[in-house]
Image: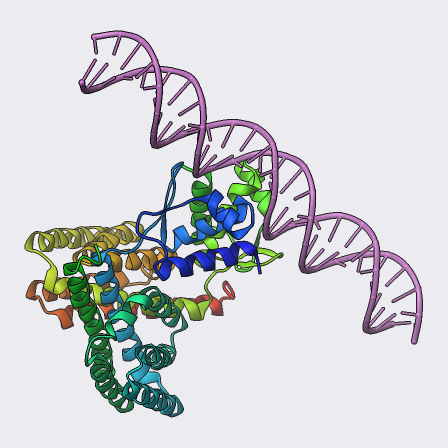
Length: 218
Length: 218
DNA sequence: GTCAAGGCGTTTGTATACAATCCTAGTGCG
DNA sequence: CGCACTAGGATTGTATACAAACGCCTTGAC
């Protein structure tokens, strides 16, 4: 693979996982040294990141990481809820019975894992459940866009699962969604999924306020 | 502004407006000559385009323009409908009275222009109406994403306005949307907007089939 | 005649050199 | 003492040179 692309991916991963704070400047020369290449591929990687909005590029000044602030984060959660709702709405009238079975299996996995209380494992199982629904929307473009935003929100979605009782609540919401999909009820399926994700945003909001009070976040 | 950015914008514009066909290779050297620069800024521009999906980059082979096919286009229209629906849903509970007035004015402009029958002018007036709603969703991220897709679909949305009676139909739908927003009815406002845009997709679909029959499109 | 292998030209990918711009620190004037 | 201006260094943006990979065409063997 092109070196520039791997650099872009690695930098993306580092920004996602919080290795950089908001406003940090990404020094081309330092990065070039760290990756053992010249500035050219580093610059190409930074260009790519600037398009996806992970960094801001100010002409003749450099590129700076742009972590979403609290407001933008909540906005993104809201959009995520709308997108997932759309997936659910469309999936209700398009999903096939074997996909429904796979969805039930995925939900069983969620339940199994939740009993153990492993938040990371639940995150993965939960992701499987949701991605199946994206796919069953029958709209590849919608699926791709939803996955993109999902990935962007990943570290923050993970956080809120650690709240007490959240996994159980999430599970019971899954049951309702599954039922609505079985019934082929577009509106109910869409609303339930939208609320299911919107709740995540609210939980995250609470969490954020708590952390802020402890001066862990700005 | 950086030369590379202007090149990216110009290329984007050219791809949007259909100066290139699907699969055309964008030759770095030719583009460099055309823009009177070296390959470096051209390459940076192409990298950016590849992130937004306008071109596909195949390692060691080059970048090729990637025009959406009929299927993807319909998928994009469907997502556009969902996004606009979301804007409408949120705007219904967040819009302020002065914004409602501005929206009414924008709709009046649409009506005036429609009487003349100028499709291009109607497109612009219509865009003003819709963008006002995006803004009133109170969600900057949603607004930006919706505008992005709107821009991507622009040339195709324009097309369907030329169908007989479409402008009048569009106008009457606007009235319903405006009323729902005035009532603060989230669900109705969202559904009406979603359908308003979904109809555009269907009209476009018909148009496409017609053109296909005339062997104008593949 | 057909298919496979290898060389050559073209194009992409990367490194380096140079130009242009910006930040900063230092100096001089009010 | 403070502010404006300028020179220096550092950093970004662009051009060019070089390396590596790909495709095509030739050539030869079966």
